[in-house]
Length: 492
Ligand code: SF4
Ligand code: FE
View 1 (tube, protein in one colour):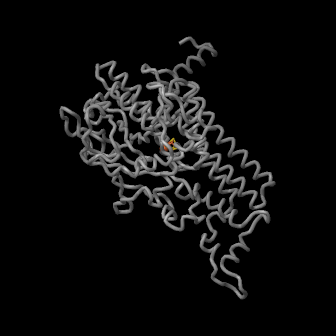
View 2 (cartoon, helix red, strand yellow; view 1 turned 180 degrees about the vertical axis):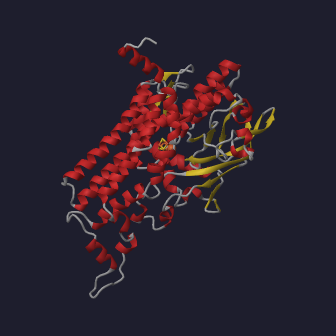
View 3 (spheres, helix red, strand yellow; view 1 turned 90 degrees about the vertical axis):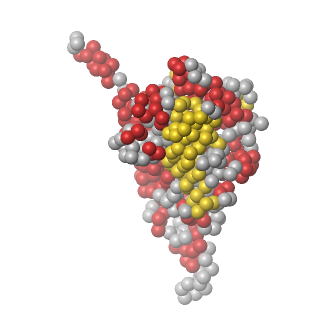
């Protein structure tokens, strides 16, 4: 089997014994939990679209290892065309879910670990790359969802890993055995970790020699002995616990997911270890993974942006304001900002380059510019969406009020009748449809989906300052000074 169906994916999660805690309790049937299920269905879309013939070219490709058809989410990019298709695939997924669909972190980790292990082996004669290719074959053959895990909790940000008061603030090796290593630590705000069958761990930042026990990369099953996950809260998340058909949820079908993944002394067999103490390669792995994931945002957030623009245009229409010139102009501005992000995602892919291992890496400067723009433009897009939607987006009564049969007033009218009367807009549109659009916008601007569209745009794939450091490193100011000197006629 090289492609899993949507149903097979969900069934595979049921077979795992992943330990999940939510709001202080252990959740045994987490697959069907109303707060978790939308995030599972969102990942399932990566399988569902791969089955759809109209998306075959974007969603699937041939494995460079086996020649078999695989889901592109498990692919090692063989060309700049592959990188461009990846961005287009992520835009498509964003359009279909209006959410973070979580699977990209694994794909980005595969590609970073693939090229870095090759270069570690080249220097030390180790066999990490061979091991990783074998692991990748297993992932591709079983169409696995893998959490690419980088972010450690980091404790005191002013101290390196080995100087932390609590050594577990960074994932580290606590024991070396002949057949493997034992690791301890955690990975914080891990996107899609519960919905993944596997985890691929990478170091979180540059490491010095004193930090070598923290310079580790490995893979492990989600339900391995010693691993458990504590679910992260999202704004308004308990709305998902209300009536599943309630329009108050905003996005009734899909959502994102983050959790803290704790490794309480976990054994990793040697064949799953891809870096162990080669601290000088931590930077390469981090920069390559971050570069890929900053490219990713030029696809996924653009797809979600498409839905936000569409919802804002619908809200204007349902309010009867679609012909106002300032509304048209705001929609133009939203489109301009959204397509600028897409330009960045495509550009850093088109300018990609071949690594020593043979796979393609994005242009680092352009990927960092892409993500830096993502830390800003979605905020402006939601500001304009809120402007167009109007204040009703945050003041309207609940779904239950619109459907209430309780009588109110002097005649026979119910609460539902009053709501439907006073919240009507364009006469050609039902009041309920108008409310649905506003609730969706509320969800994406301020509710659970704002995690994926706003704050994740700020901090996901690295906070803004991380990109500014990379832009300063890659910007080549010295070369530019030379250009100016040449033209002005300054010799030295
Ligand atoms: Fe994928 Fe975007 Fe979510 Fe990252 S933020 S996992 S790129 S959908
Ligand atoms: Fe993310």
